[in-house]
Image 1 (cartoon, rainbow, N blue to C red):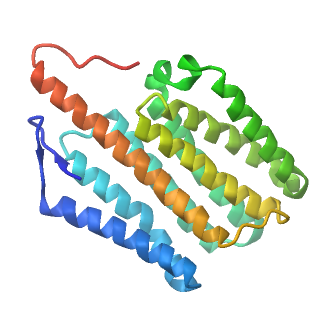
Image 2 (image 1 turned 90 degrees about the vertical axis):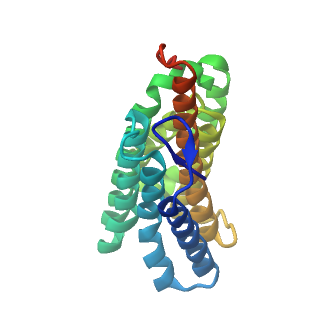
Length: 246
């Protein structure tokens, strides 16, 4: 991973290396804590995951190159952090609703961020794929609906936003698209754990967090790669604007 230089090249900086190391280190410790049933360590490291990733994004992009996509990504990471942290202060349905609420805002921010790339997404290039996404959402609701009770409405709204984000992510880049799909898997596992107890997956918490961390990292790396490519293109063609993919 490299920091992005304003002149269009890349420069490795100590702060960026430290940010990468901290982000990877916190993630590995968190996953190990889940496997080792170290609940306190898992709780502490989960709250640190998104700040560490946000620091990596901010330092890699650089203060002068935080374009719209990067700024919105940082906002989404902030709401994801709230979704990780605030529910720990609440109990029962209140905690679950707080988690859904903050992550809902994060998904809406990502939808806004990815919207300019919609013409390159599978929604336009391969519209039949939308049927697969819709079938997956309907199947998930069917599995979880009975147990969700009064929480079904918020869960369905969140699911629609999550699926929309995942579809739009395919228009940004392949890496971001994979990240959106993995995010879909992660939150589907959360729904199954909460509302479909008959679905038993060993070490469910580990898989939820592994997919969550991977999704956020893939989206972040994909956005930064796109920014780097845009900057390199701008340097090669200084007299012409970088063409928009939207």
